[in-house]
Amino acid sequence: MLQLSVVHRLPQHYRWSVDHVGEIERQETANGVHDEDLIALRLLSHDGHLALEILLQLQETLAQIQVECKIAQCEGQPCLLIQRIDESATNCCLKNQGVAIAETFDGH
Image (cartoon, rainbow, N blue to C red; front, side, top):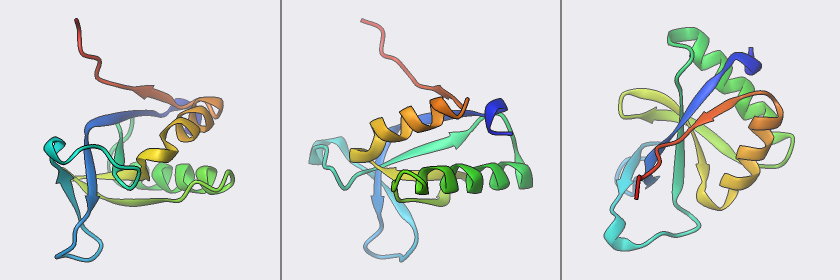
C-alpha cells in the first residue's frame, strides 16, 4: 500500500505543546525555525482506518533508518510528525518506498 500513498507536507511548523502532553501546536514564524520544530505529513490518498494503518507502516519504515516520528492529530487529521532536522532523510526514504510527497510551492 505504501507505493499507492500520497502524503502532503503541511506548510506550517509545529511543536509539542507545553500545556497539553501529547498534543501539538502551530509554531509561529516570528519565533524563527528551530531543529526541534515538527513537520506534519498528512496522508492524502487514504482516509479513516486505512489511513492510520498506512501511517503506522510509514512510521515503521522511518524507524528502520532511525528517524523518530509520532502519529498525532493535526488540524483534525492524523498526521506523521517528524523533526524538521529529519525532513530530508524522511523524504528520501519515503520516495524510495514509492510514496509521493506533495508540497506547496510559492510562485515567484
